[in-house]
Length: 296
Image (cartoon, rainbow, N blue to C red; front, side, top):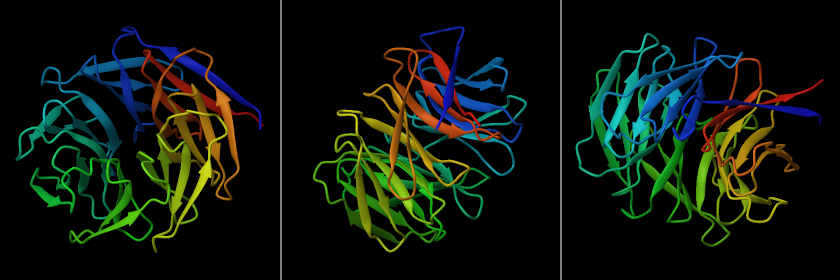
């Protein structure tokens, strides 16, 4: 497969872009963890940014909901943020101090689900801002990313419990142990095959779990690749960032892995998303937004 990677440098290179998502307006939206802004980048590389009202909010993961608003977690500020396409912010403070919200996704009913790393909880917030929390069996499980599964439930990684969790929209929780010990699961996404795919930042593997809880693991060729986030592509394959390997990885649903080097050394890629044209976009901690295009 022939690919091309283009990188767009942000005006402030120390802004620390982290999460990224495709907006309903055709642009890509991303968090600037250190710059305390929400950024927007067009296909041509034109960038606008919007300052988050709360200082040092620690904006991390970001999604675009079905109405077009973007939602994001404020790790340091203990809030869930919401921004309309015209730049209006609303912030919702979480009930418990120091919850450290991290992963975020939209549920089947339009509510927003998120993880709380500290205290081990899964949260749900509706469009009116009402928040419900569900406690996990292990308060130190460190839930990280979260995604909606093909079964209508929400699936999430438990970084410290070395497990994949499932929570129904009614709040029923099930956990599935990962075969590799201390694998450090982080990113998770729903695949075209109906399974959930996740990355193991310590185990150096890509995992696949069916909605019945059956797990398979695939070793990443590059040692210490430190995979971080993963997303399902438009052609049935999945793409993931390699923080340690400085690469973008691709895995087919049959488990075949390919890796593509990022031109900038020590780019530290984190969040990853698929653009409206099928390009793979990713946020680089070094202050850039990358776009990988598959060439015909």
